[in-house]
Length: 116
Length: 107
Figure (tube, rainbow over the protein chains, first blue to last red):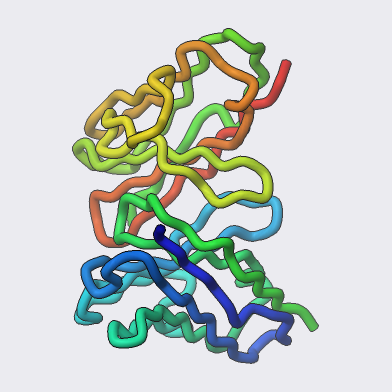
């Protein structure tokens, strides 16, 4: 069974940093693109970033480019999202998702709140 | 980036109704279009991929059509468990974008 478990969310002030992690199990992690998708409270889904199987290609939504960094450790079956210079508009539930496009498997999400 | 626009933003329908949701891309995306269903407090569920292919385990009352810039999700006979929010998403380029969502409510 595919399992994706996010952690690392919390309350931070504007301008601060946070690192999200996703522990993957139940599939061959190194064979899949991985993605982060977020959802602000009461709002729609927003694709944030994705990373190729070997980490050689990374893509970001314009609003986080230069502030967020996606990475992976295939030896540890883990995905990460380093979020710097956080803004109020980054407040959202962040989902770890298996795949680069067809999002079949999702984690339960970790909540990031950016507020002073 | 490719923009995805759904219509309507919300709709009210009754059990048994035929429901149609439209998604328009800002440029041609061939058939690179997925549809998701999301219920409150839950992660989204992939319904349709490649514009018209039904994901395994999804009831046959769901169908998708379209190519290029215009796409449609149809629920042939709305069931109580179908009241949810539906999103389209393109997979044409590496920067995936979702539509803003369509909330299907009970009339």
